Length: 218
Image (cartoon, rainbow, N blue to C red; front, side, top):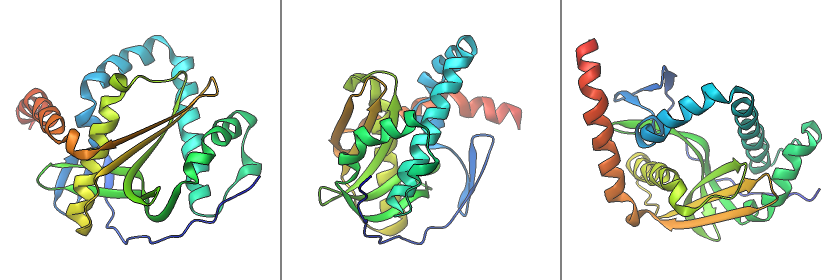
């Protein structure tokens, strides 16, 4: 299997510890980006996982294995021999898009924002087709419609804001790469400016729903 050699420009980022969906950062304890941005869908999927435990376990394992293989590939240490055929198929069909990445600044980089009061780990910060981007890798049972993955765009926009806050480097491009079970590869390229208002709304909705409950508990 042919492998690209990626250029690394890794940024030294501070680390944080995740406990019960929250991250302890140097500037406070913040909820995760996925907890805040996707809280409405998280409720739906929590019920779905209860009703479909085997499929939930399968998709969770699929995502973990695919992310792990992509990560080792981007680090120039691909572990193809250690993978099952299913994971390799998912990787093979998305590899040509991954090969458009270069100048890798962070892989699973820990980020947080005091103004947004959120934290999390971004799959990849790198150039995609020569443009600095927040890049997210997904596995999926079937192809997605754009309207179905608005939370992906909001998460990536949050990471772009955090990256600028942590490093001073602005990032305006979002790239979502999805490898589907049916052999489809999907590529969504968006601009963060189209999602900043929606991100602010999502954050406010989560705070209005959960922060009063947290205050009552403390």
